[in-house]
Image 1 (cartoon, rainbow, N blue to C red):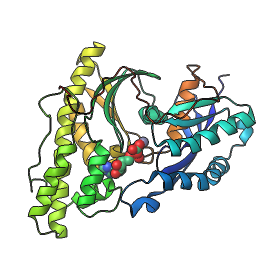
Image 2 (cartoon, rainbow, N blue to C red; image 1 turned 180 degrees about the vertical axis):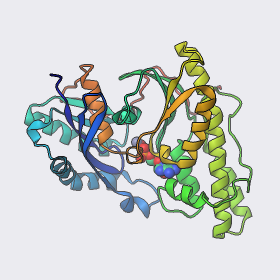
Image 3 (tube, rainbow, N blue to C red; image 1 turned 90 degrees about the vertical axis):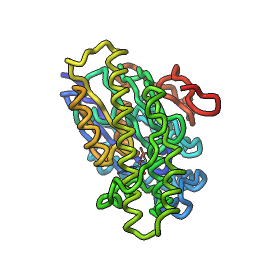
Image 4 (cartoon, rainbow, N blue to C red; image 1 turned 135 degrees about the vertical axis):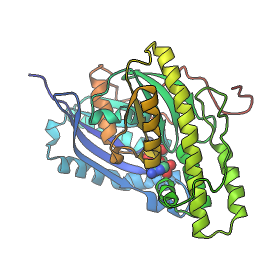
Length: 361
Ligand code: KG4
Ligand code: ZN
C-alpha cells in the first residue's frame, strides 16, 4: 500500500509565526490537520511596517507555543510525523533563523529528514493542496515582497517570465493604504474602502504598460496617488473613490501584463491556444476579490483555467511550507542540517536582475 506522508511545516520569514501539520491524500491532494498562524500585525502597526528586531523577538517568544499547538491540534503524535519542513528564505534573516533553527532541531531530535523550503515555492505550490495541478503551469505570485510571472515546469524547476522592476504589488497596496490613512498592512483595508467608490474618479498612470514584456512597475503609482490625495478634501467619501481608482488601475495592469505572460508561456512551452492550461495566482494579494474576478475574465479569453489557494493560504502560513516539503520529498530533495538561511533566494537562478539604474526594457 502507498504510504501517506505527514509533514510538520514551520514558517517565520516575516511577521507571521506559523506551524502546520499536513498529510498527503492518496489522490495527490493534501489534508491540513492543523494550521496555526500567529500574526504580529499589531506589534508593527504603530510603525507602519515590519520592524525586523521586534519581529525576531516575537518569533522567539512564540515559536514553541505555536509548534506545540500545531501538533496538538493536528491530533497526530510526533512519531506519526515523517519529516520537518522549515522556511529557509527569502525573508528577514533574523526572522528566518528562528523558525529554521527550531525546524532543524526538531528534525535532529527525532532523527527525521529535514527540508529547507523556499517561501516562494511554498506559495507557488500551495493551490495543489486542494486541487491536483498539472505541470507546466503559469504562476502569478503577488505578495508583499514579490510580484512575478513564473513558468512552473515542476517542483524545483521554475523559469521567470516577468517581475516587478520596482515595488511589489502588496507593497503598492500597503503604501497607498497608508497614504489614505488606513492601518498597516492595508491591502485588505483598501479593498474594503474601495467597495463603494467610483473607480473612474481619477486617472492614474499605467507604468511600462506597452513595453518590457510581462515585467511590471508599480512605484510610479505612489506619486500619482499622492497628487490626487492633495487635490481632494480628505473626507472618507473621496478617499474611497481614490481607493477604487487605484484598484481599477492595478487590475488594468494585471490584465494587460497577464495577457502578455500567457502568450509568452504558450510560446516557451509550445502549447497552443486550443489546449487548456492552468493559471495559478498565489500570495497575499491573491485574496483580493476584484483581482480574482478580473483575472478569471482574462482566462476565459486565453483558454486558461484559473486556480487560487483558499484565502487562508494566500497570506503567509506553514501549511504551504509543509506541503512544499512533501512535494520535494518525492524528488528526493532532502537537505542537510547545516543548511543556512538565505535572505535572498530567487526561484529561478538564471533570471535577469531587473532593478536599478541602467535597466533597459
Ligand atoms: O504573501 P503575504 O502574506 O506576505 C509576503 O510573503 O509578502 O502578502 C502580504 C501582502 C500585504 O502587502 C497585504 O497588504 C497584501 O498581501 N494583501 C492584500 C489583500 N490581502 C492581503 N492586498 C490586496 N487585497 C487584499 N485583499
Ligand atoms: Zn509570502
